[in-house]
Amino acid sequence: MDGIVLVDKPIFITSSDLVQKVKKVLKEKVGHTGTLDYAANGLMILTVGKGTRLTQFFQKLDKEYIATGKLGEITDTYDSQGKVVQTTSVEIQQEGLKKVVASFVGSYDQLPPPYSAKRIQGKRAYQLAKKGINPDLKPVRVHIHNIEILKVDIPFFTIKVSCSTGTYIRSLIKDIGDKVGCGAYMTELRRTKVGGFRVEEAVELDRLLKMEREEIERVVIPLEKALRFMEIINLTENYAKRFKHGQKFEVNMKSVDAVRVLDQQDNLIGIGRLEDGMLKPVVILG
Image (cartoon, rainbow, N blue to C red):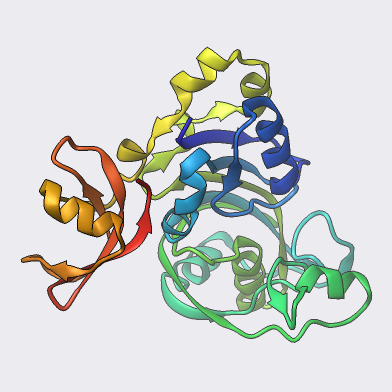
C-alpha cells in the first residue's frame, strides 16, 4: 500500500497522535506532510508505504485556511489554548479592519509563535516556552497569496487565507491585531486545501479508523496520481536502468526542482531534478 491518504483531522488531537492511530490500522509506514495545531481541524496529507520517502515534496505545497480571530486580546500561544497576557480596547470599525487585513497580501517577514514546532539549538520552541524560556525565534519570509474576509462581527473576524508553506496563521492573526493597535489571537482554524488537494476529498479520521483494509485501499491515492503537481519525464529501458542506479545524464528539458520519472510502462521509478540539462536522481523508488 503505497501512496497518500487525505484525512480530515478533528480538533483536540495532535498530528503525531493522528499518525499513530492511522499507522495502527494500516499496519504500514505512515508519515504526515505538515503539522496541524492541536485545536485546529482540516486537511492533512498522510504518506503511506513508499510514499513516506516523498514527504518533502508535499511539504512544499501552498496551503489554504479558514481562520477566526478575536481582536483586543493576545494569548501567550497566539490561540485559544493559551492564557491572555494583554487586553486592549477595540476601536476599529469594519471598513478599517478590512483595509488592514488586505494589507497583508504579499510577502512579509513573519515571527513564528513562541509555542511552535520550530527547532532552536535542537529543542522545539514550545518545549522552551513551557519551561518559561523565551525562545530566540527569527522572522521567516512568508507569502500571502490572497486573503478573503468571510465575516466581521467586531471583535471577531473570519478570513480565508491562501499562503506559502511555513506560514503561521496564528502569527498572521496576531500581526493583524498588532497593526490594528489592539492585538488579536486565533480562536478557530481549519485547513481547507494543500496544493490542489481539498478537504472535501478527505476522509474523516473516525470513519477511516473503522474501515476494513479493502475500503482503506480504495481511498489511498497511488503515488502516480498523488504527484500530479509535478511534471513527467518518461525514460527508455536503458535510461531507466541508469536512473535506478543513481546515475545522472543529459536530457532535453528545462530546469525544474522535482519531476516524476516514469519508465516506458508508465511505472513511477522515482523523483529527479532537472538542472543545466541534466537529470539527477533525488529519490529512487524501484
